[in-house]
Amino acid sequence: MGASLSEAFTQLRRGSLADFDDFKGLIDKQWRGELRDLTMRDVVLGDGTRLGTVDINSPADLALFHALRGVTGSAPAATPPSAVADAAPAVDGARFFDDALASFRERRSLANLTGDVDLAATQRIFVEMNGNKRLAEVTDDHILNFEKATANWPVNARKFKAYRGMKAAEIVRSSQAQQAARDPDLKLLADNTRRKHRDNLAAFFTWAVAKKLAASPMTGDPRQQDHRIQRVQTRRPYRAEELECIFDPVTLVPWTENRPQYFWAPWLALYSGARLNEIAQIYLDDIQAPHPGRCHRCASK
Image (cartoon, rainbow, N blue to C red; front, side):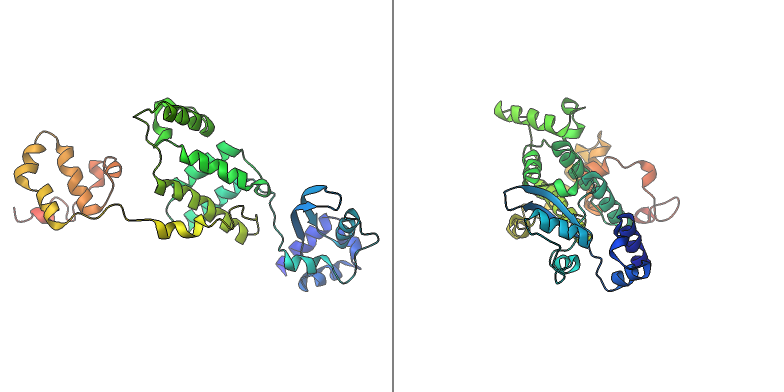
């Protein structure tokens, strides 16, 4: 009933009450599923005129659309908007990309899903390269523009002073100039990182389609389905004998005698699986012994 009332009020705001006998009839039609809207994109009329987006919200709208197409008179009773809408579900592409992706990130955060930092980077690159488009305006050209940016994106670009204050397009142009000059210090994103950015974008549009916010401009691209199968394992875990060699006290202790960070970082990496940049951010207060005042490994000493 709540959903029906909401849709009924939407129709009232559109001035559609004249199409029904009374308000109760409006709600009854919603219960029967006869108030479904229809949105069409990239419509080409008989004279070659291209319409970007067509919204049909009432029988009057449908009659007007038929008139534009060159069909005189009112729409046939056998083809109400609801019947056409069944073949093409309504899509609301009016939301802006930035707002919709922010909502997508918030829902992921509420679900305790990881990867928000990567999503934020994907969002920023896309918006800075293409502008904050409405979802209905995003095309394959914008996706290609985004992919060209990630293909020329320097590693940790946002952290380097050389790129500080630059927008994505400026960073890409600077990177391309460095590539042309064969700058040996320039390192671009790895293929897997580029794929991750593209996966982030595809996951967002899949969610937007499920929420009827947009039609995905990435549908039908085979790269999205098969790149994971083609991905190969480039690294393997250390073998036991290799770890024994690395952590041999005969060589490790003298090498790290005056560099305690060199001693502790490998041990923390070995037992926690954390990355070096994560370990480097750990404070002493972040490390707690299982028993106050002593370490259980040293209890016998």
